[in-house]
Length: 245
Image (cartoon, rainbow, N blue to C red; front, side, top):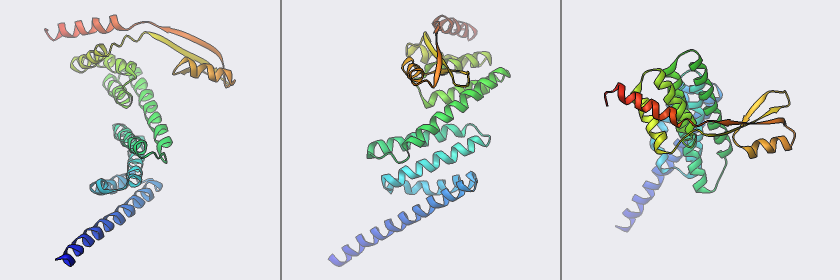
């Protein structure tokens, strides 16, 4: 009986070892597909690998989610921007794994990629708005908001474009979230000109002042931003009236 029990454990370990080798081989295939520009093939391989991730090491999980993020980012860059949300979700999972494990092999690259994705979506949404493509603008702003839910101003823009689109149900949901979180939009924007003379907006005063201090920027300027609360409450009232509520 003892010999049989030992055999079963060894067999399980052998199968686990095989799955580990298979997973490593598949991740190499994903890397190869991405290097050749074939993100569709990379996605297919990742889908096949997903079932093995639960038993993987933290290092292998981090690599998997990093490659998954890169794959969906490339798919987004090639036209289907909804893939950006999946890319950001994969990068966020990677960040959680490396934070828990105390490692940071891919953390910096993932953070930069998430920032890149948000900027792409916001810029694309702004361009859609200029072309009166209100639904596309609203959805892209909302995708960008999902990547950083502290940026309530992005949610406000999404709601505003849904109003322009006359999609009052989605606008109302966004406005209600803004009111629940106490958003007013009131504050200050911080600007300074770079060496080329182009004015840039900074996330806060400290970052702007540091750039001026180290002379990468000049001509600092502050801009007061008025509260949006009256507009939000007014739009909610109008929407409820339209809905007969």
